[in-house]
Amino acid sequence: MQALSLHMSKTAMGASQKDFESAMNQVKLLKKDPGNEVKLKLYALYKQTTEGPCNTPRPGVFDLINKAKWDAWNALGNLPKETARQNYVDLVSDLSSSDSSSQVKPEADRKQPGYETLVVTSEDSITKIMMNRPAKKNALTIQMYREIMLALEAASKDDSTIIVLTGNGDYYSSGNDLMNFMNIPPGEMEKEAKNGAILLRDFVGCFIDFPKPLVAVINGPAIGISVTILGLFDLVYASDRATFHTPFTHLGQSPEGCSSYTFPKIMGQAKAAEMLMFGKKLTAREACAQGLVTEVFPDSTFQKEVWTRLKAYSKLPRNTLHISKQSIRNLEKEKLHAVNAEENSVLQERWLSDECINAVMSFLSRKAKL
Ligand SMILES: CCCCC/C=C/C(=O)SCCNC(=O)CCNC(=O)[C@H](O)C(C)(C)COP(=O)(O)OP(=O)(O)OC[C@H]1O[C@@H](n2cnc3c(N)ncnc32)[C@H](O)[C@@H]1OP(=O)(O)O
Image 1 (cartoon, rainbow, N blue to C red):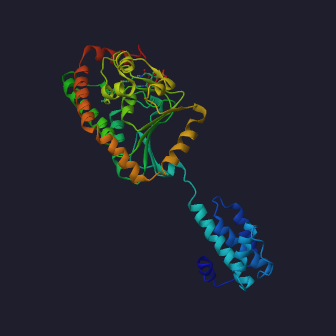
Image 2: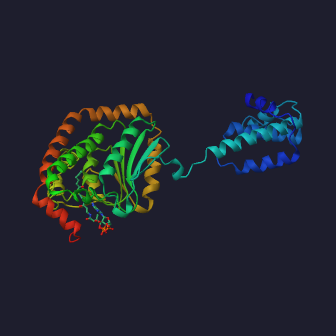
Image 3: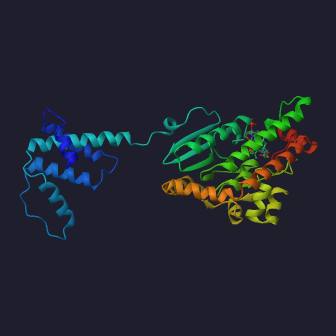
């Protein structure tokens, strides 16, 4: 009733019959259901405008819907037809404007500025960080590592409940961009290896310390570091087109992303060795059977099913979810940072080895592909 009296005082000039008819058409075009209470108000005002005060018998006690409608109409008492018409038109006008402002904006409008290699969007309490170099299979450049760290830092402070990392195009990510190893002057190798190890330590450190639920939406094949850090995520959803490949030995490199600790814990020593030492590539279903992936979805329905699931999860009590994540993670944080430091110091050495340099040169001269 409060809303109705508000509408009554809104216009000095009365609404015409034409305004009323146009408002009736507008109601049919509303995209958002206005809810039962508002629908009853609309009904009552419509009846009052077209028939005057309610003077029909009250429906029986079990005729719940018609009784509610009758009550709403009857509550308008002797409200003049012209006022009811005006109130109907005002109410529809309010509903139409809130309906258009609540419509979902296209992704381009929701995109957060400032990223060149990522598309970062926030909607439904979910911040989505999408790696965006599809032509290069989302290979991670130095800039991309830095932008992911910045996006995670921002997402840890925004009002989102869940954070998603995913890839644009047919790959999730082909791992470290091997061009990162190019154009290093001969005398600078050691310095660059040291800088690489610091970048990697900080990058993996962000995932270790991230305070909110972190979900990987694996839209296609994943290689190298994009696989190893999965042990630091809370949920990993994969398309059945995805594969998981850590070919470190082939590349003269050693495991990172805390995988030397998380993988044996997740899948057992023998399976972890087959992946991390011998470079066995897993299908999504194999990775799920081994506990690295939470659930696999058919590629044709992957995005729809995953986002429906995540939207439901994002409505869970936010603070409770974050506290649970932190209690689980805090038990291991110190250990994970120690593993991260150790892995990076080993890798720093490997990057200077002939085996690594030859593997990278071989890829860059297009002789070898994984
Ligand atoms: C500083 C921190 C270091 C952290 C340590 C991390 C280690 C790792 O992540 S190790 C894993 C490194 N990744 C690889 O070795 C993958 C190398 N890429 C491939 O083997 C293949 O490109 C492929 C299997 C991923 C895809 O093959 P294909 O479908 O035939 O497509 P193309 O090879 O033609 O790829 C299209 C385009 O993208 C470029 N590209 C793909 N991945 C990478 C990469 N990781 N690094 C650099 N460039 C990559 C590829 O060269 C093609 O480029 P153009 O020829 O210019 O089109």
